[in-house]
Amino acid sequence: AVATSSLAAMLEHNIVTHWLVKVFSGTANSAWHGTVLVTFIFALSGSNAAAGVADAAQNTAALAASLPLGTLADRWSAARTVCGGGAFVLVATATTSLAAVGGAAAVSESGRGRAYALLVVAMALWGVVNATIDGPAQALYASSMRR
Image 1: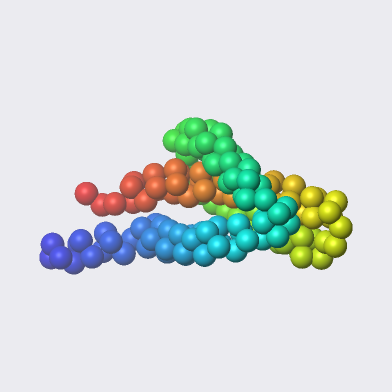
Image 2: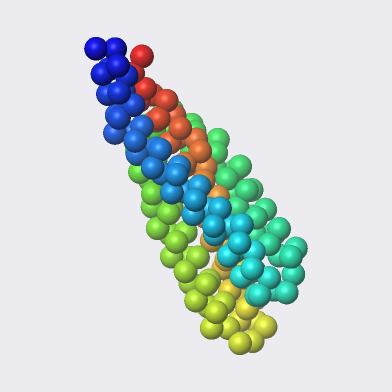
């Protein structure tokens, strides 16, 4: 009976969902951020420092969003906060796609500059997504564990 209740706790919906989000998020982030993104930014700007600026935008946005999102999750609902964070996934994906298409199509330096600026905005949006996944989603995960 103990093994069955432990298995039931492990298979609770929020726990399984959190595991899946972390696996897919981590895999996608590793493949995208560590290889494709830095190569694309270098192609747009000709500078490795530009990748650092984009990364700083993402991490600064995550830092700025973490406390308000955590407070919202504590006062409102972690589940609703995570669902609301899902909207940022859609906006960040659309913004990243526009930057990628614009950057790939850009033939002029100003066109590449606009695509890079849009990509920096997209990275900031991804920072908010990461703050949602790393804070409220973990709180939801922890509260879903049966004691």
